[in-house]
Length: 258
Image (tube, rainbow, N blue to C red; front, top):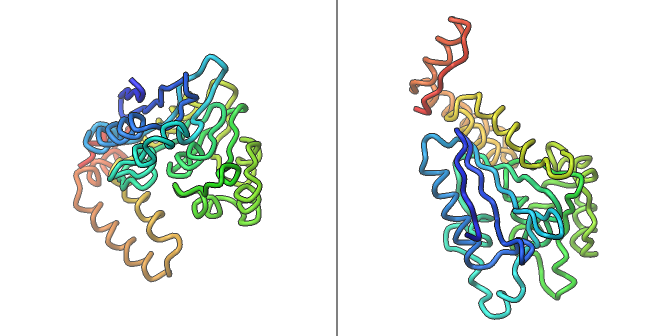
């Protein structure tokens, strides 16, 4: 299978598995990622997703971007109607997804990372949007998402030079990467981050994610309105009562997601 999906407790792990093609995105990968996100979104027991890439014979790699051979014959095949490129970059979601990046995440690989909510990267991770080297533009979100995550001049340099050497350490310094890991450990550290999130009420996590995405660049009045609506929504859930009861009884809450 070009994309593997593994449910581990409340975590759904998506692995791009085309090691012979450096985990590049073709039509099968796009459809596979979309299907895996469908499973995460539809499964009330899965609260957090992780997106990663299989190890190749030449070492770790997250994703080399679009399969240029496939693009030459079927340029639209690596997109889906719901998710856009890779079945993911334009996908509407309610649950957080963490990118676990071991090795290079280049071109469309960087754009898959930018579409995630958080990033764990190992010592071997590299980021870049080198499309200008092939008379292309980073059309899967890189040209507007990257300057939201990095200082604009740094993002501009990456876009115009096509540099392939933006390290995990530099990405962490500028805030693109949440946590650093040793080589081969990105997935394990991503699992640890996901487990921390899963200790919390899944409805509140989803609502908080939604607010941050929709309100960050909006006027304060929109943020206040959505915050008021959100807390009222939480008041009407079973997990609201469970959270208060667990606090009073000095025990860990048992979340139901309803």
